[in-house]
Amino acid sequence: MQINFEHIQSAHCENGVTSNLLRHEGLKKITEPLAFGIGSGLFFIYIPLLKVNNGPAFSYRTMPGLIFKRTCKSLAIDVTRRKFKSTEEAQVFLDDCLKSGQPVGCQVGVYFLTYFPKEYRFHFNAHNIVVFGKEDDNYLISDPVMDNTTTLSTYELQRVRFAKGALAPKGQLYYPKIKTEVTDDQIRFAITKGIKRNVRDMLHIPGGIAGVSGIKYTARKITKWRDKLGVKTAGIYLAQLVRMQEEIGTGGGGFRFIYAAFLQQAYQFHPKDELLKISEQFTKAGDLWRSSAVQAAGIFKGRITSQQDFNDMGNYLMEVAEIEKKAFVALSKINWR
Image (spheres, rainbow, N blue to C red):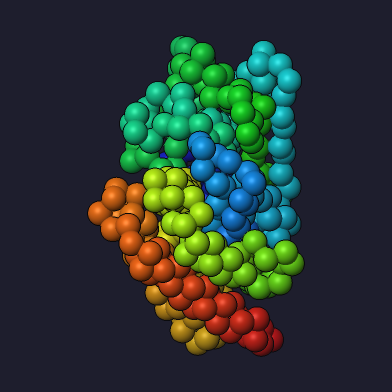
Protein backbone atom coordinates (compact mmCIF):
# COMPACT_ATOMS: atom_id res chain seq x y z
CA MET A 1 0.00 0.00 0.00
CA GLN A 2 1.30 3.39 -0.97
CA ILE A 3 -0.32 6.78 -0.42
CA ASN A 4 0.20 9.53 -2.97
CA PHE A 5 2.24 11.65 -0.58
CA GLU A 6 4.46 14.50 -1.79
CA HIS A 7 7.91 14.53 -0.17
CA ILE A 8 9.35 18.03 0.15
CA GLN A 9 12.77 18.42 1.73
CA SER A 10 12.94 20.85 4.65
CA ALA A 11 15.57 22.41 6.87
CA HIS A 12 14.03 21.05 10.06
CA CYS A 13 12.15 17.81 10.71
CA GLU A 14 9.10 18.97 12.70
CA ASN A 15 8.50 22.00 10.48
CA GLY A 16 8.79 19.74 7.45
CA VAL A 17 6.48 17.04 8.77
CA THR A 18 3.92 19.68 9.80
CA SER A 19 3.90 21.54 6.49
CA ASN A 20 4.04 18.33 4.40
CA LEU A 21 1.14 16.72 6.29
CA LEU A 22 -0.91 19.92 5.98
CA ARG A 23 -0.06 20.07 2.28
CA HIS A 24 -1.34 16.51 1.92
CA GLU A 25 -4.58 17.71 3.52
CA GLY A 26 -4.85 20.38 0.84
CA LEU A 27 -3.50 23.35 2.85
CA LYS A 28 -0.63 24.24 0.54
CA LYS A 29 -0.19 27.81 1.85
CA ILE A 30 1.48 26.68 5.07
CA THR A 31 5.15 26.48 4.16
CA GLU A 32 7.93 25.33 6.46
CA PRO A 33 8.74 28.89 7.67
CA LEU A 34 5.05 29.64 8.28
CA ALA A 35 4.66 26.45 10.31
CA PHE A 36 7.75 27.38 12.35
CA GLY A 37 6.54 30.92 13.02
CA ILE A 38 2.89 30.07 13.70
CA GLY A 39 4.15 27.34 16.03
CA SER A 40 6.36 29.90 17.83
CA GLY A 41 9.34 27.63 17.26
CA LEU A 42 12.15 30.10 18.02
CA PHE A 43 13.54 29.81 21.53
CA PHE A 44 16.65 29.52 23.66
CA ILE A 45 17.23 27.81 26.96
CA TYR A 46 20.32 26.71 28.89
CA ILE A 47 19.74 24.08 31.58
CA PRO A 48 23.04 23.70 33.48
CA LEU A 49 21.90 20.76 35.63
CA LEU A 50 20.57 18.65 32.73
CA LYS A 51 23.31 16.72 30.91
CA VAL A 52 23.05 15.42 27.34
CA ASN A 53 25.93 13.29 26.03
CA ASN A 54 28.08 14.47 28.99
CA GLY A 55 27.50 18.15 28.26
CA PRO A 56 25.00 20.74 29.49
CA ALA A 57 21.63 20.98 27.74
CA PHE A 58 20.90 23.83 25.36
CA SER A 59 17.94 24.27 23.08
CA TYR A 60 17.41 26.82 20.35
CA ARG A 61 13.80 25.83 19.65
CA THR A 62 10.63 25.15 21.57
CA MET A 63 9.81 21.72 23.02
CA PRO A 64 9.46 18.91 20.43
CA GLY A 65 5.86 18.47 19.35
CA LEU A 66 4.75 22.02 20.10
CA ILE A 67 5.29 23.38 16.58
CA PHE A 68 2.86 20.83 15.12
CA LYS A 69 0.40 21.20 18.01
CA ARG A 70 0.40 25.01 18.04
CA THR A 71 0.23 25.38 14.27
CA CYS A 72 -2.79 23.10 13.95
CA LYS A 73 -4.55 24.58 16.99
CA SER A 74 -4.07 28.16 15.79
CA LEU A 75 -5.53 27.19 12.42
CA ALA A 76 -8.45 25.32 14.11
CA ILE A 77 -7.35 22.01 12.57
CA ASP A 78 -8.22 18.76 14.33
CA VAL A 79 -5.31 16.54 15.37
CA THR A 80 -5.01 12.86 16.21
CA ARG A 81 -2.06 11.97 18.44
CA ARG A 82 -1.40 8.56 20.00
CA LYS A 83 1.27 6.97 22.20
CA PHE A 84 1.51 3.25 22.88
CA LYS A 85 2.76 0.86 25.54
CA SER A 86 2.68 -2.10 23.16
CA THR A 87 4.75 -2.33 19.99
CA GLU A 88 2.13 -4.63 18.48
CA GLU A 89 -0.66 -2.15 19.15
CA ALA A 90 1.46 0.66 17.71
CA GLN A 91 2.07 -1.28 14.49
CA VAL A 92 -1.59 -2.26 14.10
CA PHE A 93 -2.70 1.37 14.51
CA LEU A 94 -0.08 2.54 12.00
CA ASP A 95 -1.07 -0.12 9.46
CA ASP A 96 -4.75 0.77 9.84
CA CYS A 97 -3.93 4.43 9.16
CA LEU A 98 -2.00 3.52 6.02
CA LYS A 99 -4.77 1.19 4.80
CA SER A 100 -7.25 4.07 5.16
CA GLY A 101 -4.97 6.34 3.09
CA GLN A 102 -3.72 8.39 6.04
CA PRO A 103 0.00 9.30 6.15
CA VAL A 104 1.20 9.85 9.71
CA GLY A 105 3.94 11.73 11.46
CA CYS A 106 6.07 9.62 13.82
CA GLN A 107 8.46 10.70 16.57
CA VAL A 108 11.58 8.53 16.41
CA GLY A 109 15.06 8.12 17.84
CA VAL A 110 17.97 9.08 15.60
CA TYR A 111 20.59 6.57 16.80
CA PHE A 112 19.16 3.56 14.94
CA LEU A 113 17.98 5.33 11.79
CA THR A 114 19.78 3.12 9.29
CA TYR A 115 19.55 5.59 6.39
CA PHE A 116 21.30 8.34 8.40
CA PRO A 117 25.08 8.72 7.95
CA LYS A 118 26.84 7.28 11.00
CA GLU A 119 28.26 10.65 12.03
CA TYR A 120 24.70 12.01 12.43
CA ARG A 121 23.50 9.16 14.65
CA PHE A 122 23.40 9.96 18.34
CA HIS A 123 20.95 9.48 21.18
CA PHE A 124 18.29 12.05 20.30
CA ASN A 125 14.67 10.85 20.45
CA ALA A 126 12.73 13.80 19.06
CA HIS A 127 13.26 13.40 15.34
CA ASN A 128 10.16 13.42 13.12
CA ILE A 129 9.34 11.50 9.96
CA VAL A 130 6.26 10.71 7.89
CA VAL A 131 5.26 7.11 7.15
CA PHE A 132 3.22 7.02 3.95
CA GLY A 133 3.02 3.39 2.86
CA LYS A 134 4.22 -0.18 3.19
CA GLU A 135 5.58 -2.62 0.62
CA ASP A 136 6.18 -6.18 1.86
CA ASP A 137 8.21 -5.75 5.08
CA ASN A 138 9.33 -2.19 4.35
CA TYR A 139 7.60 1.02 5.42
CA LEU A 140 7.85 3.99 3.05
CA ILE A 141 9.43 6.94 4.83
CA SER A 142 9.45 10.66 4.08
CA ASP A 143 12.16 12.16 6.26
CA PRO A 144 11.99 15.92 5.61
CA VAL A 145 15.72 16.44 6.08
CA MET A 146 16.60 13.88 3.38
CA ASP A 147 16.74 14.53 -0.36
CA ASN A 148 14.47 11.64 -1.25
CA THR A 149 12.08 9.19 0.34
CA THR A 150 13.48 6.03 1.87
CA THR A 151 12.37 2.85 3.67
CA LEU A 152 12.65 1.18 7.05
CA SER A 153 11.91 -2.46 7.72
CA THR A 154 9.23 -3.32 10.26
CA TYR A 155 11.95 -4.11 12.82
CA GLU A 156 13.91 -0.93 12.07
CA LEU A 157 10.85 1.30 12.35
CA GLN A 158 9.73 -0.38 15.55
CA ARG A 159 13.19 0.10 17.06
CA VAL A 160 13.28 3.87 16.39
CA ARG A 161 9.62 4.37 17.41
CA PHE A 162 10.38 2.76 20.77
CA ALA A 163 13.86 4.12 21.37
CA LYS A 164 14.77 4.39 25.06
CA GLY A 165 16.06 7.38 27.01
CA ALA A 166 15.17 11.06 27.35
CA LEU A 167 12.15 12.14 25.28
CA ALA A 168 11.38 8.47 24.51
CA PRO A 169 8.85 8.52 21.64
CA LYS A 170 6.76 5.61 22.97
CA GLY A 171 5.54 4.83 19.49
CA GLN A 172 4.02 8.28 19.16
CA LEU A 173 2.26 9.07 15.88
CA TYR A 174 0.10 11.99 14.85
CA TYR A 175 -1.71 13.54 11.92
CA PRO A 176 -3.97 16.52 11.16
CA LYS A 177 -7.45 16.32 9.69
CA ILE A 178 -8.88 19.40 8.00
CA LYS A 179 -12.69 19.30 8.06
CA THR A 180 -13.43 22.78 6.71
CA GLU A 181 -11.51 25.16 4.48
CA VAL A 182 -8.78 27.16 6.23
CA THR A 183 -9.23 30.78 5.21
CA ASP A 184 -6.64 33.53 4.81
CA ASP A 185 -8.21 35.26 7.82
CA GLN A 186 -7.44 32.18 9.90
CA ILE A 187 -3.85 32.19 8.65
CA ARG A 188 -3.54 35.91 9.49
CA PHE A 189 -4.84 35.22 12.99
CA ALA A 190 -2.48 32.28 13.42
CA ILE A 191 0.51 34.39 12.34
CA THR A 192 -0.20 37.15 14.86
CA LYS A 193 -0.84 34.62 17.61
CA GLY A 194 2.42 32.84 16.84
CA ILE A 195 4.42 36.08 16.90
CA LYS A 196 2.88 37.29 20.16
CA ARG A 197 3.59 33.94 21.81
CA ASN A 198 7.20 34.04 20.60
CA VAL A 199 7.58 37.57 21.97
CA ARG A 200 6.42 36.23 25.34
CA ASP A 201 8.79 33.25 25.23
CA MET A 202 11.87 35.25 24.28
CA LEU A 203 11.31 38.37 26.39
CA HIS A 204 9.12 37.59 29.37
CA ILE A 205 9.77 34.07 30.70
CA PRO A 206 10.98 34.50 34.31
CA GLY A 207 14.02 32.73 35.72
CA GLY A 208 16.88 34.05 33.62
CA ILE A 209 17.88 30.87 31.76
CA ALA A 210 15.41 31.10 28.86
CA GLY A 211 14.85 33.49 25.96
CA VAL A 212 17.03 36.56 25.53
CA SER A 213 17.92 36.49 29.24
CA GLY A 214 19.09 32.90 28.81
CA ILE A 215 21.43 33.86 25.97
CA LYS A 216 23.00 36.57 28.14
CA TYR A 217 23.22 34.17 31.08
CA THR A 218 25.06 31.67 28.88
CA ALA A 219 27.40 34.37 27.59
CA ARG A 220 28.39 35.33 31.14
CA LYS A 221 28.93 31.69 32.11
CA ILE A 222 31.16 31.01 29.11
CA THR A 223 33.58 33.76 30.07
CA LYS A 224 34.10 31.97 33.42
CA TRP A 225 34.35 28.40 32.12
CA ARG A 226 38.09 28.50 31.39
CA ASP A 227 39.00 29.15 35.03
CA LYS A 228 36.17 27.14 36.55
CA LEU A 229 36.22 24.01 34.38
CA GLY A 230 39.65 24.04 32.74
CA VAL A 231 40.30 24.34 29.02
CA LYS A 232 39.47 20.71 28.18
CA THR A 233 36.08 20.53 29.92
CA ALA A 234 35.19 24.05 28.83
CA GLY A 235 35.93 22.99 25.25
CA ILE A 236 33.66 19.96 25.63
CA TYR A 237 30.87 22.22 26.92
CA LEU A 238 31.34 24.55 23.95
CA ALA A 239 31.33 21.56 21.59
CA GLN A 240 27.98 20.64 23.11
CA LEU A 241 26.76 24.19 22.49
CA VAL A 242 27.72 23.83 18.82
CA ARG A 243 26.25 20.33 18.50
CA MET A 244 22.91 21.47 19.90
CA GLN A 245 23.14 24.55 17.69
CA GLU A 246 24.20 23.10 14.38
CA GLU A 247 23.30 19.42 14.40
CA ILE A 248 20.07 18.97 16.37
CA GLY A 249 17.07 20.20 14.45
CA THR A 250 18.87 22.82 12.34
CA GLY A 251 20.16 24.67 15.39
CA GLY A 252 20.52 28.24 16.50
CA GLY A 253 21.69 29.89 13.32
CA GLY A 254 19.41 27.91 11.06
CA PHE A 255 16.33 28.56 13.15
CA ARG A 256 17.00 32.31 13.01
CA PHE A 257 17.18 32.14 9.21
CA ILE A 258 13.88 30.22 9.12
CA TYR A 259 12.27 32.81 11.39
CA ALA A 260 13.51 35.57 9.07
CA ALA A 261 11.86 33.72 6.17
CA PHE A 262 8.68 33.38 8.26
CA LEU A 263 8.46 37.15 8.72
CA GLN A 264 8.98 37.69 5.00
CA GLN A 265 6.19 35.24 4.20
CA ALA A 266 3.99 36.72 6.94
CA TYR A 267 4.23 39.99 5.01
CA GLN A 268 2.15 38.38 2.24
CA PHE A 269 -0.72 38.09 4.74
CA HIS A 270 0.03 41.23 6.81
CA PRO A 271 1.58 43.84 4.46
CA LYS A 272 3.43 45.74 7.17
CA ASP A 273 6.88 47.03 6.30
CA GLU A 274 8.10 46.42 9.85
CA LEU A 275 8.03 42.67 9.23
CA LEU A 276 10.57 42.95 6.41
CA LYS A 277 12.87 45.21 8.42
CA ILE A 278 12.74 42.96 11.49
CA SER A 279 13.37 39.95 9.27
CA GLU A 280 16.79 41.42 8.44
CA GLN A 281 17.65 41.46 12.15
CA PHE A 282 17.00 37.75 12.48
CA THR A 283 19.21 37.05 9.49
CA LYS A 284 21.95 39.07 11.20
CA ALA A 285 21.40 37.10 14.42
CA GLY A 286 21.68 33.84 12.45
CA ASP A 287 25.00 34.94 10.96
CA LEU A 288 26.33 35.75 14.43
CA TRP A 289 25.21 32.38 15.81
CA ARG A 290 27.18 30.74 13.01
CA SER A 291 30.24 32.91 13.75
CA SER A 292 30.02 31.97 17.43
CA ALA A 293 29.96 28.29 16.42
CA VAL A 294 33.23 28.74 14.54
CA GLN A 295 34.75 30.42 17.61
CA ALA A 296 33.53 27.60 19.88
CA ALA A 297 34.88 24.96 17.52
CA GLY A 298 38.28 26.68 17.55
CA ILE A 299 38.40 26.49 21.35
CA PHE A 300 37.27 22.85 21.39
CA LYS A 301 39.96 21.87 18.91
CA GLY A 302 42.63 23.71 20.89
CA ARG A 303 43.48 26.27 18.23
CA ILE A 304 42.44 29.20 20.43
CA THR A 305 42.32 28.75 24.20
CA SER A 306 43.20 32.06 25.85
CA GLN A 307 40.84 33.87 28.23
CA GLN A 308 40.34 36.49 25.52
CA ASP A 309 39.06 33.74 23.20
CA PHE A 310 36.45 32.82 25.82
CA ASN A 311 35.62 36.50 26.25
CA ASP A 312 35.15 36.82 22.49
CA MET A 313 32.82 33.82 22.58
CA GLY A 314 30.76 35.47 25.30
CA ASN A 315 30.69 38.73 23.35
CA TYR A 316 29.25 36.96 20.30
CA LEU A 317 26.33 35.72 22.39
CA MET A 318 25.82 39.09 24.07
CA GLU A 319 25.58 40.71 20.64
CA VAL A 320 23.10 38.04 19.50
CA ALA A 321 21.00 38.65 22.60
CA GLU A 322 20.83 42.40 21.98
CA ILE A 323 19.82 41.93 18.34
CA GLU A 324 17.11 39.39 19.17
CA LYS A 325 15.83 41.53 22.05
CA LYS A 326 15.43 44.56 19.78
CA ALA A 327 13.78 42.42 17.10
CA PHE A 328 11.21 40.92 19.46
CA VAL A 329 10.51 44.30 21.09
CA ALA A 330 9.86 45.68 17.61
CA LEU A 331 7.52 42.77 16.86
CA SER A 332 5.66 43.44 20.10
CA LYS A 333 4.94 47.01 18.96
CA ILE A 334 3.37 46.16 15.60
CA ASN A 335 -0.21 47.34 15.29
CA TRP A 336 -1.92 44.38 13.61
CA ARG A 337 -5.16 46.20 12.83
